[in-house]
Image 1 (cartoon, one colour):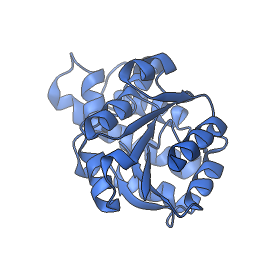
Image 2: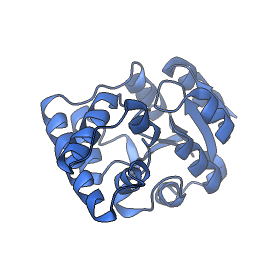
Image 3: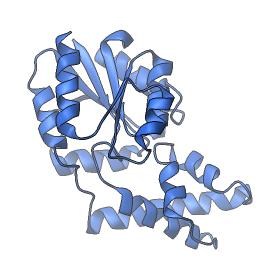
Image 4: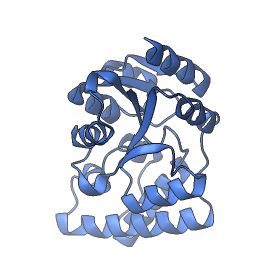
Length: 219
């Protein structure tokens, strides 16, 4: 068996508007000025407390939990009222891979378990993933613990797995864990940044990614 591990935000799900809006809601709740969209997107992929710390280097540490709590509350409201769409081709890619008898699927995401469970339920993904690793129980990406846990749960060796993500944190995590690393060009970090981090390829769309994963699985 081989294992394909997907990131979520920026890879499968287009949650940009929700993330930026929720982060600035958290800043407002903590009495801080709003920040630039690109600043917010630059930290997508990190666990929330780590991301907030990166965005507030000059803010008192005791203020950061207020930002975190405000973000979570705003994101939950946004998810309940609007939700985030899948990128075009995402579901087709997952269905194609799940239909093969030589591939297992997993998730490794900086989302909370609660947020991931809600997403899985919304899209009917319960049967698809043999492992769902979240930031609640692991160090933030790019630490490899999350990916190593997915490998252990799937019982697949690192050299028979590939991580698919949209940020350099996903790529660095994959390289640290000893798996392959595929980037996607439609997420939150530019393609050049992913290639510089060590991605074996950066797919411009899901059609290209699907073909690349099929070729990898057939090797």
